[in-house]
Amino acid sequence: MTTKAAFIFVAPEADPQKHCAVIESPVIELSVVGVKNYQEAEETAQKLVADGVTAIELCAGFGSEGTALIARAVKGKAVVGAVRFDLHPAFDHRSGDELF
Image (tube, rainbow, N blue to C red):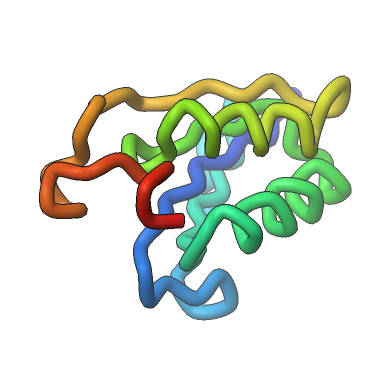
């Protein structure tokens, strides 16, 4: 049985229609999707769970508030985890909570 999982990354000019991929292996089908802000991440997470994703990992660009937002958006439908940097090097050492 294959598990459907997703990794969502946030970057200011990301477009979930263009910046996406699906990686299939015998055990897991991983969707990778880029979004430009937290609102788009919330919408994307809801679409992913509607397509059967049961686990979502968020990139380090998501701060605590962004992670909580996504967890609430998919509550009961998928577990949510996050890679952690307190201050993300790609965002000029700021948290996504300041930017998105």
